[in-house]
Structure formats: C-alpha cells, structure tokens
Length: 125
Length: 487
Image 1 (cartoon, helix red, strand yellow):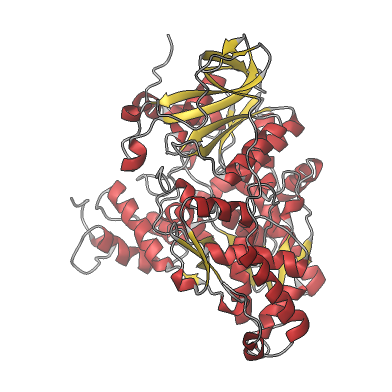
Image 2 (cartoon, chains in turn green, red):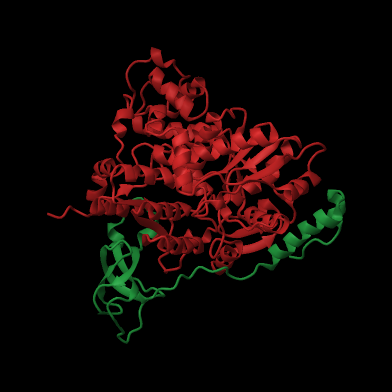
C-alpha cells in the first residue's frame, strides 16, 4: 500500500476495545480497478476508510474490526484513534475582504455611475 | 457460498441488485427499442399527490422555506444595468431545511418510500448535501443510513467540503465510507446494497424528483400571491439534473408555465472528474460542469436503470460562471445582505447578478436555493486548499480564469458575466450517444417524440441530427421511408 500521511508510527501502540477509531481497507488494488479510470488514478489503489468502535483491542497498523454507528462490523487496518474532523475555514483571503468592502462603499457612499465608482479606490491586488 | 465480489462480477449483477434495492419495476416503463421510456408514467408512479408530499415534508421539518428579496444586491446590479432594467432578485432560503439544503426535499420522499416498503435502512452514494439530507431524514424515520463519499486523493488529502459532509452524516448517526477518487464508488455501492439489503436512496428516482417539486411549487404560489406575477426566470444550480427537473415540474404544476428555467454551473472544463491529480484542484464539489455536462448528454448513466432527473428536458437556457465569481458573490451576499451561505446556491446567485440586468426592473428573478455554510464549505477553506495545490488566485478578468490553474476574482459586480452553454451542442451529443448504443437504424415516431421532449426541441431537429449522428452523409431521410437498420 502507498505511504499515506496518516500512516501509523513505527512503535506499536495498543488500542483498547471500545475506542472510536478509523480503519482503512483497500477495496480494489490498482490492477483490479475499472478500465475506464484515467491513467493517474489507475496507478492508485481504491481505498475506503470507515469509523467505528473497536471490537477487540488491537495494535495501531494491524488488522481490526469496528462496530459502526449502524451496529455493523467492518474490518480493515487500524489507522487512527479518535479521528479528528479536519475541515476548517482555512486562511483569510484579504482580496475577498477588500472586494466586499469596495462593493459596500460603492453602494452606500458612491451612489453614482459606474465610471465614478471605478475612478476611486479599486482594491489592490 | 459467498457471491463473487470482483469488480466484473458485481457489475454484471447490477440490474438485479438495483431492482431489489429500489422497489421500482423500471421494465414496466420501457418502450420497445431501448431508446424511449414513458417518462410521465414513471414520474407519476409514486402513490403520493403533491399535497401528500407537502404534508409528509412538513411532518419531517422540510419545506415552506422563506423567499427572501435581496434588495441591496438588486440595487448594486441596477447601478450598472441599462435604464429600467435590473429585475428584483429573490432567493429561496433552502438552508432553513433541517440538514441545511434543498436536498432534504429530495431525501424526504425516498425515506417515506423506503419506510413504506419496510426497508430497515438506506444507502446513498453522494459526496454532497444529499448524504446529510438522507442521514437526517433517516434519523427522523428511525432508519439506518449508510453513505458513500468520494473524499480523498491518493495522498490522503481530503476535499474540505466533503470532509465536512462526513462529519455531518456521522452527526446524524450514519455509517460513512470515505473513499479515494474513482467511479468504483458505484461498485462498492452495489456491493453494500447486496450485503445489507438496504434501500437504494438514489438521487435519481421519481421519489427524489417528486420531493423537489414542492420547491418550484412554493416559489410559483408565493410569487403569485406576494407580487401578483410569476418569476420571469428561475435560476437553478445545475449538476445531475434533479434540481432543475423537480423545480421545473413544480413550477409547471402550479401554473408558472411562463417562467424561464435557467441552469447555472461552475465552469470546471478541462479538469477530469475521475482524476486523482485533478481531484483537489477543483474548488467545487457539485453544481459544476463536470457533472452538468455529462449528466445532460447521458442522463441514464446513474445508479438506477432510468434517471428521473433529465436536465435538457426542462432547461430553457444554461449558463456557466467561474469559481472566482461564485466566491465573490458569496462575499457580496455576506457584505450586502448579511447572509453567509454555501457554494451551491451562490452559483446560481452569481448567474442571477448578471441575468437580472436583462429583465425589466419590475420583473422577478428567483434563485431557487441556498445551502448552509460552515467549516470546509467556505471560500476561505477552498481558496486555502487551492493555494496549497498550486492554483494561483488573482483579481482580474474572467477570461483569465483557468480551472485548476488560476482562480480569478472579479473586481466589481459589473465585471461578472455568464457564458452561454450551447444547448444545441449538448442535444447533438446526447443523440450521438443514443445512436451509438441503439445502432444506426430508423426511429419510430414514438421515439422521435420521446427524444424531442427529452431534449426540449422539435421532432425536425431530432430527425436531422439523428441522420447526421448515425454517420449518414446523405441528407436526412424521413424515418418512415427508410428500410432496416444500417451498420
């Protein structure tokens, strides 16, 4: 399997039964993939990750079974303990803030024609 | 004995798996020849009247969302519109549905149907709002929901918006399968349907469409009551075709036959939807041309035998906007109207800021959805990922925009524009695909009628283009006069 940023550390970490964890399983190895996938995708395995409560204590990186929120058992390689939900808002985008401000000014203060508005204070790039 | 789980073996069982899991006998609606089917009979097959749908939805916290007038954005548009032009812009605040988008409507009737049929659980293959909607509605019915999502590239880098959807689905108690890039999601979908015996809560059944009809209906009725007129145009973000289809049917059913239905997609041309490399160079996960174009020209390549969402059948006009224009519009909506909303509705809103200039100031242009926003579903989240992926972000002209390479934010609203999609070209492409599958043979009258309706065009167009797409270099011959099928 290809290296992944979420690969476990080398030293073995034992995870007790009942922990909320993530497992990873290869659904289709690269050679077994659909024939119509683009060449770059065809080189990769088709991989799934599923979260659930660990059914029996296991080492990180070893095969394990989880019980999902639907009370179903799913097996795979144990890759993460209490996996974080990583979505966030990212970095601010100053250009967007300036553009919004400019639109606000043109509506509330400019009040004139497009030409007049354009002559004053375009946002810097 | 365990069934064969190889890709090829599962795909050969697809028809049987789909039949069992969706509870609709699609064969009943097929017409001879494999080209046409009885679209209306399929659409009307669910045993619910539009009033039943409304009552079911209200009982499950769906619908009756506010129709809000965007007076300051309208004013901004009028500043640069010709005198007397600049329609009133309204938006249907679908974010008020329990899972934060209009997809709650689409999910609601699937879940009602699954519950009626005695299924214990449902499965949906979707990376977007629909997964959260299915999980949310399933929670209300006490049914189980399993959601498959395309989330990661092969380096394990997740698309922020889909990561948020994983969280939302799990919050509603769903089991989520997070997947790497590729169309094999459908294979796994089939495998899990077989393993669980759950209902296929496909986006593309007549139940899903029926659930969206209330959206068009509410807009038509409220506009007639509040403004004494129907909208001149309604703009719907166009992807798989269900938003357009359900809304248009609802409008017509409520008598708004004079309203133009305009689809809007984010332009992602040049990026491959199944490419591991391109996956995170897209800043939009839906409402883009990567779905809008292929679904328009080949609607039946979905997870049910016949797609009830048929974009070309209902679109009067189809436009694209750039990623930068949608981000700019998102900022304007917050800055001028005090509303933070997500990308799906803001795609059609971006188009509305341009299209409204064409209409008289007393006319109405309605953007028919908003969606919730939040972590991952925000311009700053997407632009941060875009930068990390080497995509340049500038302020400038829309013709400098290059999907996957450069995102260009417009400087002002009057520098925004829409690109017209040539519907004739999409119709021809659709016909070429049908011809390739059916073989070069004459069309029966009922097939011409079906194709003309499915493409929202004339029988003449179908006949001429059919002859052309079938490779005939001769002038089109009247179908009734031709002999057997050609090579």
